[in-house]
Length: 329
Image (cartoon, rainbow, N blue to C red; front, side, top):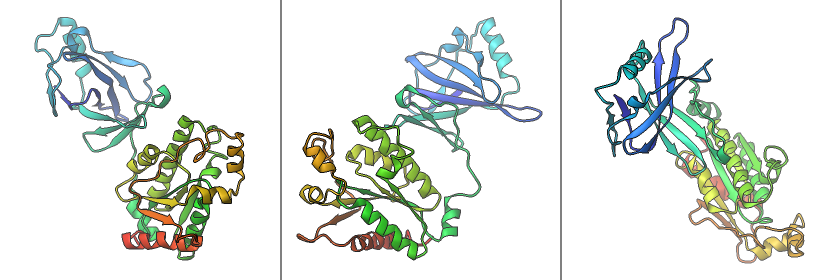
C-alpha cells in the first residue's frame, strides 16, 4: 500500500539498506492520467541516472484517488510477470514514504516529506530541477541570531524612481551599523550589475529580477542579517511572492509614498526626461504602471510640501524594528 495525499503529483522514496551507504530510490512524478490509472517510475539517487524499475501495466490500476489523506490499494490478483517485478523490486526495501508536492505561483514545487524534510522542484521556463532535498544543518537561524544579537528579516523598500529608496536604505544601514547591528543593502540598480545583468526591463524580466532579489534577501535573513532591499518592484504580485517565501513577520514592506511630480522634479538619473522624450519605453510611472502597496507595514511620506530628511525616515523604520523585537535575539 502507498500513502497518498489529495493532490495530483506525488513523489515516493524507498530506502534500500546497503553495506556502505544507504541508497534512496524514488517514485518520480506519479500522476493520475485519469481517476483510475497511473504509472510510476522508480529512479535511484546517487550513481544511477536511468530508471531501475518501471511498474508493469497490471501494477497501474488503483482505486479512485482519495479526496483526503489515505491509502491507494493495488489489485490483489497480479499477473505472474507483475508479481515477479513486484517481488524483485521489494526485496530489502524499507517502508515507502509519501511526499506531497505543492506547486507554488513562482513555478517551484515545495515538496513536503512525511518526515518533515523539504525538497523543491523548479519548473520555471520549463526547466525542472528534480530530486532536490533540503539538507538541514545543526547550526540554524536561531543560533546565528543569538550570535549576532538580532533577528534576521527583510526590509523591502518600494517606490517610484527618485522617491528616495536608496537614500533611505543607506541612512538606515548606517544608523543600524553604528548600533552594532549587521545589515546588507540589496540595491535594485547594483544587483543588475551582476546577478541580474542578463535581465531586461520587460515585464517578465522585471518579475524575475524581483524574484531573484527576494531569494537572495531570504538567504541574508536566514543568516541572521537585517537585509534592506531597495527596488522599485512595481507589481504587487511580485512583492507578495517575496513576502510569501519568508516566515510571517519577517518581510517588512516600506512604501516610499512620494508623489510622481516630486520624483520627476528630482530626476537624479535623468530617466524621467528620457522617458518623456520617448527614448525610454516602459518606464515606471510614465508608460508603465506602479501598483502601490495596499497593506505595507510602514509608509514614508512628505510632511506637507516638505520631505523629511532620510535619517528621520530611517528612524521611523528603526522604531518599528525595536517595537517588533528585531534588534535583539
